[in-house]
Image (cartoon, rainbow over all chains, first blue to last red; front, side):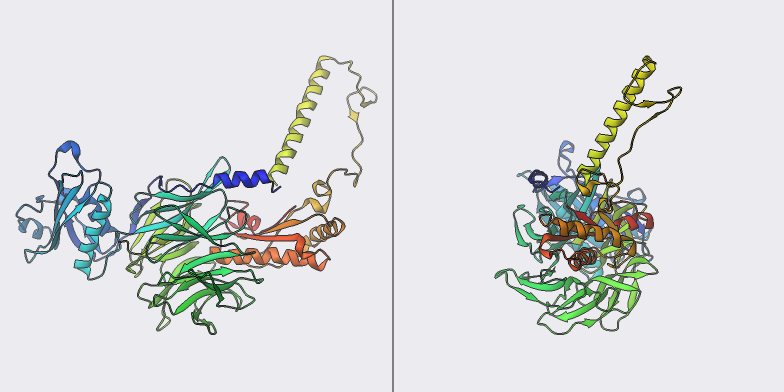
Length: 434
Length: 174
């Protein structure tokens, strides 16, 4: 049945379309944290002509970002007693009386080149003092990104931790039309906006992984009816095939310095972990066992790799030094544990655990093995940390659809990211983008 | 597989269409005298069926042969072949031994439970188990290609045991 014609058709169906725009992901906060900081972001004043009002509302983007983090509870516009901009004198009594501790005001001015100058100020309401404030030039195209960067600054100023709003997520979608599925690898802003397709195929695409500089994605594609690992430049669409050995070519994972790619290959008969030097393309076998060894992930210091193995029966998480050595089993909770990855600070692992037949996201501290289950779904998969470690994005299968959810590392805040149709899965949070 | 299913649908549709025509003709002409054997009042007609084993087409397409079955199913998180499929796999082994020019691809598939890359490993293990069964029956391994799709290509898109049991499978593609 595998005719040359079929092969040609499947090859034609694979398009490399950088930046094909599709439906936005819709984010809904399903569980907020108690004790979130009250903050007010006054709508930013537009000083240009009304007809040229920018497409995106900077103040709203900042307010939504802060709310999504679960650390803040922004005041709704209708409760504001005054609406100063960053050019106005603020009457702090208007904010103290309704219990607002921090206030963000701003201004968007048109500049001569068709772009904007954004000015914002962050105030401590009780002290009546400005804490921070900047003027940031931007373009119409970068307006949302600039708004996310301002939200990052505000978040860092108020919490002492770096923000992760000016980041992106990559994910895989599967949309069925006329009995046939189209699988796509997409990237979107972390708030779900600007989704763009970077690869599309009728055959499976899986396991996307960002390079540490956020410029490339490694992934697995079955487009030639045989799995192969590709590395694609996100912003040009150019790509190279890295491996297409006989058997499994899967689970690519970048080393923190971007020079090596860990992966799963079964060319020697069964799945083992390998490390490839991306310059020399030389392969080194890191695990040798008849069991299934897969899903490698690097420690942030680049010294260890954790991976899934069923060498003891059911899948569990093991750790091996990158320099070689014997793997050490790390997980003993639940029925099985798989697909672990490190938190950005290297202190914890997040993974998929099976409890009473349900698959859930769990975190385990490396120092004391303290184990916490963070989600309550039936089939939660593919956890990925935000680059600041505050949130974990994952996929969840409910009501017959697979969609994305995010949970804060402390498990208190949850949100749902839904696509209008089809399945959305395998989310991976980008590193911080320059 | 899809092509073959379509083929059968076409043949069936054609059969139904032509039998419909015939009955229409008959209703218009009650004295029609066809090749069918008529007895008594002529309200019943009989004809001989194909003898079992009379199949003259490709033996893989004979619905009465165990070779017709090209999908076998697995239990959760195992690659052990269920005894109910021994007969099917033995028939395929015999066919492959008797037809040394034939090669095949074995696809391994899983249900959606468990992590995706682990399931790629499990699907490969299922495909390899079937390959080893054939090898043990005398088929050269070089004629058998294997590929694992893990949980990426479910036969049934549902999310319960009824769907999962259809998705934990090995497919023989000639």
